[in-house]
Image (cartoon, rainbow, N blue to C red):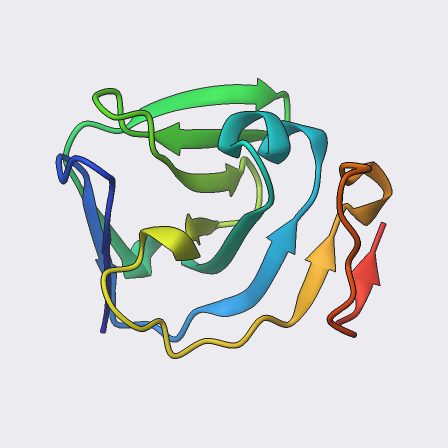
Length: 123
């Protein structure tokens, strides 16, 4: 089981499903909301339990982002038509047991760092 929470503990989440797609997102929206690179993995919507006050922000017509309204932690990302929810790997309480698979939206990454870990990169 994977359990996670926001910085203040008001929002918690857990899943017994095996997360997929562990990645680091370099898109402009993730950089602006997280202050850097956002790492996440996803599970089916019905396999993720979320408790607490999540505020959802529609940053685009195709997806929304969930964050804690108290501490501001960026915890979730979900596309409107996929049936999965991505959760922040940095919010996991304890070891994740996951290994990064790829970097996504590398075409809009910040110019202040290099990606040099050898993982696949998708623009």
